[in-house]
Image 1 (cartoon, one colour):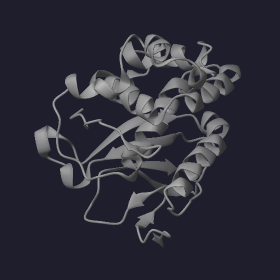
Image 2: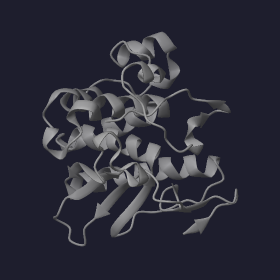
Image 3: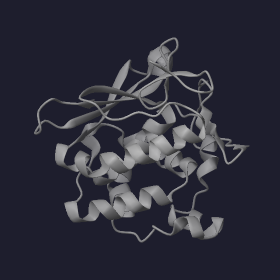
Length: 221
């Protein structure tokens, strides 16, 4: 457990120390051949609307994880520093991640889980080019129907891989909101609350972007 400069107690990458919070877990095995398991732990939400206690989301090949882990760590630590929260690093075993950061990680992990190695750097660039709320939206629509490890070649999971590994979105932050929306399939990312039923979530420090609150409700995947 770490106490950040804003007096927020966290563990891992921003995961709050509280009463069983909703968070994500990256399990890094001791060996170099077993896959990295990324799971969503619903915590106190387990049982609501049929939610499981833990839902495994992705089995990522260790070699692929090694290609993305440093960039993800850098991105997350920059975000944590911006909120005056303690930074972290990947360690063997269980790594806890704040729920919104965990959703962002899965967008990248799902995009590269079956990708050719030479396309992974492009996926990383495109993922970095997306706004946090765009990553949350992509997670929500993907997890709603294809959120399990067995869904890697189905629907949104396959589309996500093509979108991030093949599309030239690296400069997406420099284009207009209308064009950004078109690149993401014609949808406005922050409008996801009209797509799914919602359940109450604990506040997240990452729901304030550039000084303004992001109006995104959590979906019951």
